[in-house]
Image (cartoon, rainbow, N blue to C red):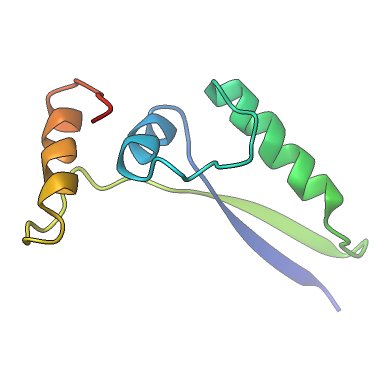
Length: 91
């Protein structure tokens, strides 16, 4: 039986935005660049035990340039404002 596996992947530009919003996104990964991230994703994929009839699809993840502002997410919304203006900052 053919197996299809879709894996979420951040394309260039999106990974940096995601790391601002979710600082622990890559906790435990030795990643300092998008190239390192791609190598780690590849390494993890190669460790999967997939049959010969398995098909892997990399599905690009686009980080939305907005977050609904609520009292709980106000800090995240502030970070997203910085992303929109092109200023990626760690708070």
